[in-house]
Every structure is written in structure tokens, then in C-alpha cells.
Length: 346
Image 1 (cartoon, rainbow, N blue to C red):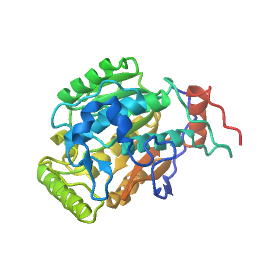
Image 2: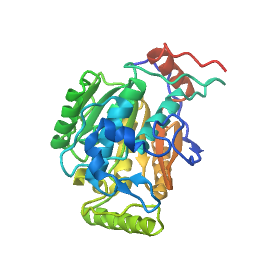
Image 3: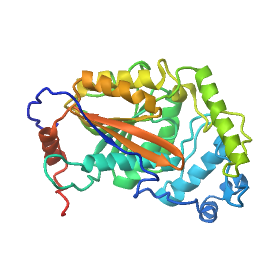
Image 4: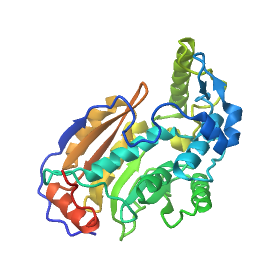
């Protein structure tokens, strides 16, 4: 790992980026989906096409099978992922929002406080990322490798999910760039998972949001009511699906303590890896959890904390990133691990 100067103790700093009104500028999914191109590349998508009350072509986004078909077409046309599928019932994520998280992390790696210049986004296999809870869909490693060439370790507590993710990586010739690891203790996140030689430039995670199956079911009912309201106003699609929105197994949707409890555990464990990871990060679905997250990060003496806002349509989301390295240490990390990426010219 890089040689880092001794870290002085100081409280965490807080920098909050306001939420964008749209997708990240580098996101490939601006504007409406080109369903003609998508169905030409993936004909199976055509059976899910519907007409909106406004006369536009779309799909029922509450139907996991429809979203799975759309994702398969998007991955094929936009990212060159020819083979992608999920076991029934596993989480089928919305790709544009997942891509936004990765683009925000790329900006974070390029950020600099040690001088007045921005650095180029580090690309290529030298950049190593850890995806906590990759699920059966493997979406972050697929997008992160295709967009930036990063190398990933993808982890999960669900063996079936890992086998499905492994099949996707194998089918697309990506096993050299995406390593799969099983976390055998569901209550742990980093502990027992990392090896002595492991060093990561960043970690990312979409934590389970709900605290129980009942909580998840209630959340799904609220989403379906919102879909009904959007349909009545002519802006949404009718829902024919009886399952959870976008699917999902219990390990993907809920855990003891829900999102807040999961992130607290992640923060506590991250403190023991302070010199082995440059930036930790996690999505935070509920803005009301941010105050507790900041408090927890202050208690473990994080050196820098970022809250990065994201938006897709009317949906506002964000991720929180933190580091235990000060500006001098991050500059040393960059010089050691990313020497091919000098500061960009003004």
C-alpha cells in the first residue's frame, strides 16, 4: 500500500453538494429511451412496450420482468454487455441512477484539496473498487469497468446471488477484472472479508433500506400508490405486477436496523481500515438519516465527509463518502497509485 504520512487527529469536515436537477453530465441515459434502437438490439423488450397516456412509448417500471428486459437492452447497446440475466425474484436495478453513483465517485477520485487544480479521473485496472452487496445483478462492477476500466471485488452474503453474478462475469469475459467474494457472516461488512494485501481506492454500497419484511411491503405499497397517482395525472404507467417494485430478495431489501443500522456498522468497521481505503461510500436513500451518519463519522474521526446529491426525474437521492486520510495523505496516495494521472491543465 502507499506510504502515508502520520495522520493528525482532527474532527471530520463536512462538504455538502446540492442535488442536481438531472443526471450526471457523463451519464449515457439522458433524455428518453430510444426504444427503436433498444428493441432492435434486444427484440425480447418489444413484448413489454406500452403507450403512456401522453402517447409516448414506455414500459411498466413496476414490473421486474419489464425492467429486466430494458436493462438487458441498455447494457447491450450502451455498455457492450452481451449477456445479462437474473434469477427470478432478485433485485433488478434502474441503470441510470446506478450509473450516476459511479460518475459521482469518479469525480470524487479526481477531486483535490492539495492544490488549485483538478486532477484527471483515474482510469484503468490500477483503480481497485470494493462493491459491498453486489447482488445477482453485478451492476456496479459492470458499469464501473465499462465506463472507467476499474477493477472490482464484488461481495455478497447470498451464495445464489454470487453464482448469478459469477455467470454474468464469465459470460462477458470479465473474471480477470471482477473478483467475487462471499461474506459468510451477515452481520459483518468489511470484517473477515478483506485479505492482508487488499488496498482499495474506493468502496461503494447500496444498503438494504428496510428493517423488516413488513416494512418493505409497506414501502412497496406506497410506491404503487404513487404510481397510481402518476397514471391518473398522465405521467406514469399502469402497474400489472403483484411483486415488490424492481423485485428483490430479503437480503437485498431489509436487514436488522434497516439502512441506518447497516450504515452505522459500515462506519464502525471502516475505522479499522483507515489506511487501506482511500474513499468509503454508500448510498443513503432517506435524507433523514444524514444527521446520524454525520454524527457517526465525527465519532470515528473521519477527515473529510462528502454528501453528493443526485437526481433522476423527480427522485432525489444522494451518496455519502468519507475518508480517514487528510489532504496530504490523499496526495501521497494519488502519487503512489495513480502516477499516470497528472493534474489536468486549467
